[in-house]
Image (tube, rainbow, N blue to C red):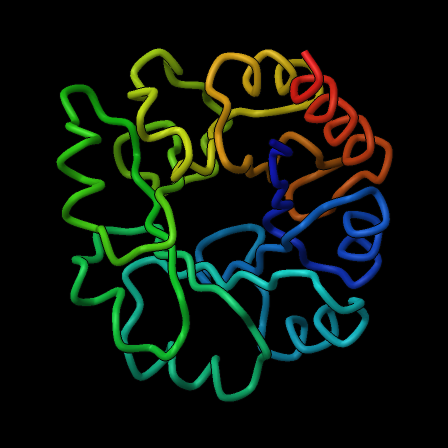
Length: 208
């Protein structure tokens, strides 16, 4: 099985193209204003316009209102929603798009119970936990905490970069992986060489 790859936090059309040309399956657009990787509607439209077919566009929200989500979806063509806050299953549903739920790997969390609660999602994105931060910590959590029977529903995130992604794929065998800061030159600005190196690492992990 080939591990799918999402490059998140894209803020420029050229970075989106670099990700796709290197082999990314999905592009993440952050609609969370406090994030250094947040995009405006105009920025998002410019990114989407440049991308070829068969690339999944993902819109990331953190505890956003239904009205604001609807406003964005009316103006930006996205395929999948990512909820990265404290949203209940009910808040994730009813937007007319499939969705995934981010789970911060706080000590004591029961992933099996969480997967059951969010059974309507397309998958769970697992990120490192840091108090007061919804994501983008750059930290790695203990991959052994992931039940093997859930691997097929998991998008692995949290501190991934070109130097550890091969080991991550080997250890978890997730359905997909997600990276943002690990392939950046500066916050919000991707580096094409790092993206290419990351994707090569995913492929090595798949082959081993």
